[in-house]
Picture 1 (cartoon, helix red, strand yellow):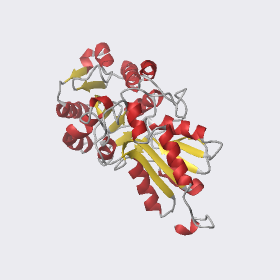
Picture 2 (cartoon, rainbow, N blue to C red):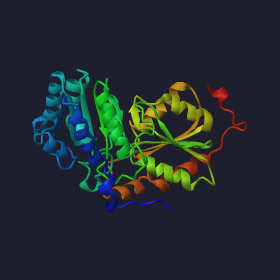
Picture 3 (cartoon, rainbow, N blue to C red):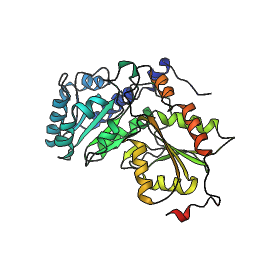
Picture 4 (cartoon, rainbow, N blue to C red):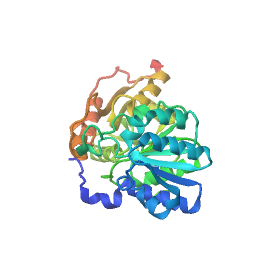
Length: 332
């Protein structure tokens, strides 16, 4: 039932490749852009920037903490610093520097965390990045974006440059299905995109799970009307879109390539709980475990965050019983 994708699709769809191209394009027009990596220029595709602008490119070696500290210093000197390393190294290994040098100083460092979620699944637990959103969204002054595909990654990079202050942009190793056919679909920082209308249930997704949610909605359209929201910005979260979905569909599922603790699901749950509104709610994501080792698509299936997993989640929530009058306005 689920749509599949293979390694042969990734050459033209890789978010990391698009990130490298967009950054080079921006740097042609803005000489204040500098780029840094921690010995991962090729893997994170920022090497293209180094080839084109060697005088503005710094490879610090396998030293992520130094990379973030140097980036903060360059930003204090008037540059806009883009850093590039694997998501888990950015959010865990260099967290002290992220906290104190970047976020506390509130400087123009734009951090790209690549190979995020389970997208580098075959590399093992040391390279899985299923905690990074939960870690990074607790940092004051930091905006967190999880693009759905390469087109949205391009919009996120441009937005990060144009918006003062620190950013964390989380992208995959590759394996991205195209969600958007054009870049002028209406990307706005902190505003979700409604990809599919629906009145029965809302699926709120981010990153690689957005395409899976869209496919699930299409496959279920004769059975149930599933609204799909691309919640690309985790911080600041689009609270208005969440509460609108609660009021209009009263059934919410979140789905993310991340732990169920601390990420998109937790952020949405906080909004719902704070509103006092009642709804049926379910989080789909990686459970409180270190994930298995394997290919990304296989791991998404194992943890129920692929199309089939989302369909099963929707069917479960739709099967729950509610109060007889189905009127929840009295639950405020």
